[in-house]
Amino acid sequence: MKTQLALIFLLWQMAISNASGQVSSAPPVSPVPAEGAPPPSNYPPGPVEMIAPPTMVNPPPPPPSYSEPLPPPTPIIWRPPNMAGPQCGWLETDFLLWWTRSMPNPTPLATNGSLADSSPGAFGQPGTTAVLLGKQNVNFGPSGGFRIAGGDWFGNEQRWGLEGSFFFLAEQIVRQKISSDDFGNPGIYRPVNDVAFGESSLFVALPGMAAGFISVSSASELLGVEFNGLYRIVQASNWNLSAVGGFRFLDLSEHSNIETITNDFAGVLTGPNNQVEVPGSTLSVFDGFHTSNQFYGGQIGFQTTAAFGSGWYITGRAILGLGDTVQNISITGNTVQFQPGIGVTTAPAGGLTTAGNIGHFSHDAFSVVPEAQLKIGYQLGRVVNLFVGYNFLYWSNVVRPGTAITRNIDFQGIPTSSIYNPGVPPQAPPPPSFVNTGFWAQGINLGILFTF
Image 1 (cartoon, rainbow, N blue to C red):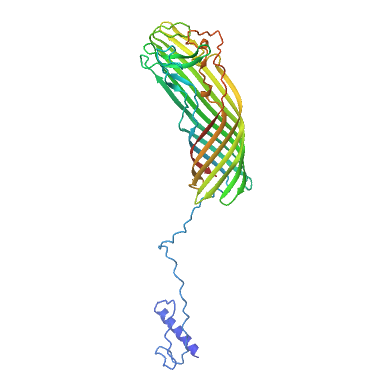
Image 2 (cartoon, rainbow, N blue to C red; image 1 turned 90 degrees about the vertical axis):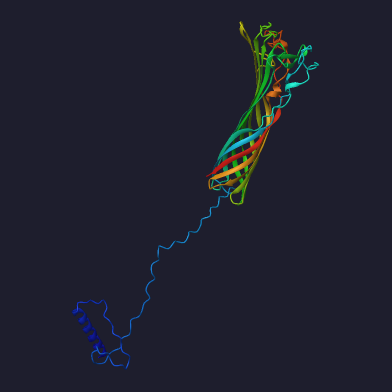
């Protein structure tokens, strides 16, 4: 009965709200009187049933506010790859600053002298007191160059690889010159040893009679190519060891050129025509000595790389080449005379070069070529590395131009002598002998290495 009364009361309230034009989304619930209390005045008469209040549900949390700053992302720390670990391909280019062994030149080329001597400038004469040129090594100093190298590892374990490299040292030139003044002071002479007359000399400058100079130009150039196979013997976490073997080519090209120019302003010297020159004549004498050495051989060695720190690594290599060196000596010479009013006269011989030694000569010699390399590098990124290194290369049994020069001559083959006779083969100088000597090159490498 109480439930029926409550339902009738609720319907009555809804009818009143609709009649007044108001819409209520939820009918109001009047407070329920406590048990035993009299019902409110708006309740209809009769018993009232107690109604429990609805269960309260916590509202869902509000959505996050995107106006607040997001937390910073976790930083990603780049760690360079291990240069001592398995690698694929690489390409490097180096700037070279190397020094080479000085060029030997044991032959005296110019002396001083006195006109009071029977043979001015000749050895053994009282007035010959100093060697002005020659009889000392030619020091070239540092030489710039470059090297390009590259290679690749292949196979599932990257145990096998191939590499190739090319390096070039630019030509180094040293020029030496001794000159007189316009009146021929001081006197300059070329000491020679004639097969018939013994110690004598050739005139370059004579005080009061002829002015002149003598110059010596020495040059050296080196390049090399190699191709190697690689086999990785040991591959640890921070270091490796590889065997290296392949083919090497080296080329050393050098020359020593001697030139004299004499202005015979008094007309006292003899030219290629065996006659005394007219005053104001000019004599130009040239002697050229050129050598080249080409090494062809195999080589074998080892290479190791160790990584340390963060991005640092060190690489060392030791390799030994064995093979043949083709030695070449080329000798040229000429004399050019200009006489005012007469013209130019030439002769195919110089002061130390005649028909006896002018020409091209070749010889073969066995050579040993060891090389050592050491470099330390740092990785700037996953691809780019910078390094600095040291390189030492030795080459046994090469010929050099200074050892091909001799002052032993035959005056019959010298155009500036008074007994020049081109129709008679001179007895000296003979064909050059191949004097073997060692050669080395060493220096600093600065480079950039790309790995991929």
